[in-house]
Image (cartoon, rainbow, N blue to C red):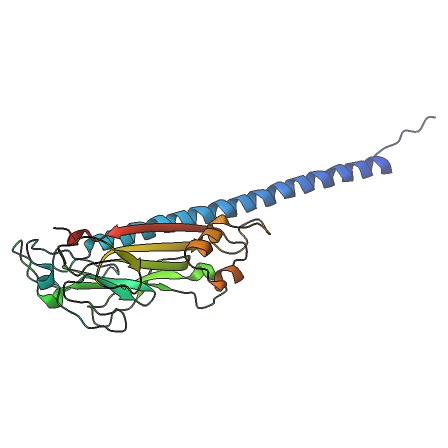
Length: 271
């Protein structure tokens, strides 16, 4: 009688195991590649969203600097001198932007009584029933914007851009933009003559009236979102052109970066 073999031979089993191993390795690599791609894309999107929001927010408030409910009121009358404090440097008479620690301060007249500020709080209440009337000088809105570095210097992506209405007693700085690795601001200075609209220099300690604000924001992702060993041209540009801070290179850790920049001329100084 002829006997028939049932089942798999050892060689067939080994071939099947080998093919299965190759298949599992291929699927695993596809999964890892997709996860890396997803992390890269989500980090890029997050940086872009934060950059757009930061620019929209800062530009919007810088356009308000020096706003007067009565346009024909002299800017020196609408905005008296204000002494320096822990949040803002001195506001000279008629000055609507001043320097601040790691940021800047602006002031303007509220358009309506109790309008919301950058923190979502209601500004001071005043009688706005008549158009083209100025609010009392103690009802001005004065906002301080600043960069708050992360508590842990190695976590660059945990820095924030903050705002506070210093005219509200007991108010605190609140976070507006997250993932901020660094922040830089320069001021455009012009002659003290309010009718002379020229900007003669940019810097942080110039003389004359501040007529423009130029800011740069560096956004950073969480670590290990970039190919290990690769360089970030965006970080290199920041280090070369804006701020060559050692903490940025030391704590890079293969992050993704995005820069947003803008220069805003204070339009309410215009005639």
